[in-house]
Amino acid sequence: MVLQRLRKPTTDPLDTLVTESPAESSAATPTSDLNARYGRGGRSRRPLLIGVVGVVVLAGLTWLVWAAWVQSNPPVTSQLQGFEIVSATSAKATLTVDRSKSVEANCRLQAKSADFSIVGEVTVTVQADAPRHQVLPVTLTTQRSATSVVLVGCTTADQHRPR
Image 1 (cartoon, helix red, strand yellow):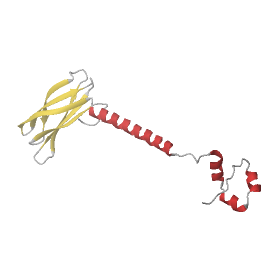
Image 2 (tube, helix red, strand yellow; image 1 turned 120 degrees about the horizontal axis):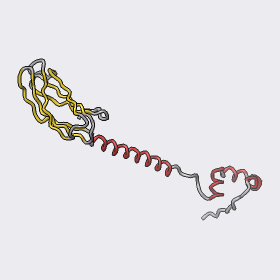
Image 3 (tube, rainbow, N blue to C red; image 1 turned 135 degrees about the horizontal axis):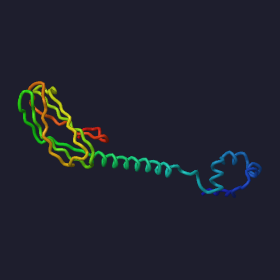
Image 4 (tube, rainbow, N blue to C red; image 1 turned 90 degrees about the vertical axis):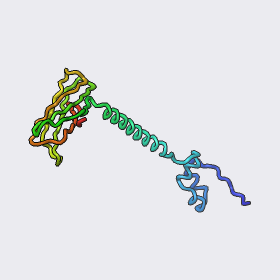
């Protein structure tokens, strides 16, 4: 076992220069002097980083929940109940419109031919003062014989994506 001489911590840096030999002073760095004097190392930034990451994740999750809620509760929804091809230039459809608020809605239907080209189109306006749940009969005039009627969807002033 090797005995080592214990140094008492100095409070004045000039005392270190005067009392220590060059070999001892080269081993002591300013960081180790501070650690010896105050008893601990530099402060870790890990808690700050964890806090910042936590705030960003919380903000992202809050936005995700808000966006999911808004998109899952649209002010208007619509459904095509059925259609009938009446003649080479006409088709009838039955449309159901549900609104959560009394807002004006525009619903678009398209008549398509066998080659999937659009041969007729109509936009039906549901007034704001109309009942919130409605079943609407719609007649489409076509350029040539249609094989199907497709509901594109309904939009409002606040809801630009057809539903």
